[in-house]
Length: 204
Image (cartoon, rainbow, N blue to C red):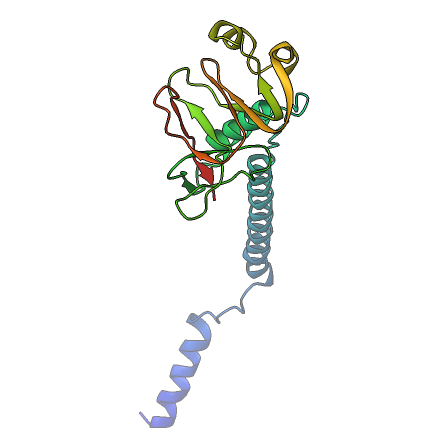
C-alpha cells in the first residue's frame, strides 16, 4: 500500500471517529467569572463592615469623659487638693512624682511647690499620716487659741464652719488637718514631732 493511500485512510478514520474539540463555552466560562465577581464584592463589603465595626468600637472606648469638677469653697485649698489627689490616683498613674525633701511650711508670702535643701518652698501637698487627711491651709488667716481637736474633726474642710475659729492676719498661713493645726508666718522646716505631716508627692 502506498504511503499516499495510508495517509488518506488515516484522514478518513480521523474524520469519522474522532470528534472535533468544541470551543470553550461562553456560558460555562462566564458563570465562574460572575461567581468570582460576586465573592469579591461580598469580601469587600465584609471588610468595610468589619472596619466600620472596629472604628465604632475604638470610638466607644475613647469616648470617655473625665469630669474633674473642683469645689472651691471660699478660697480654701482643701477641696482643690483633694480633687487633685483623686485625679492623680484615678487617672494619672503613668505620671512621675517627686516628694519634698526636707518638708517646709511657710507664710502666705512664700510661694508653694516642691521643696528641697536648695530650693526652699512650702509644700502644698501635705498629708497627715495620723488622721489620713489632706492638710488644708488658709492664706492670711490664723487659728484662735481655743481651736481644738474635736472642733477640727467635726468641721474640716468646710471653711464656713471653720470661720468662727479663724482670724485674719496678714502674712500668716493657717494649716490644719482633722487632728492638728499650726499658724506659720515665716518659712521653716517641718521638724515638730507632734505634727504627722508628710509630703504627699507632687506630679512632675
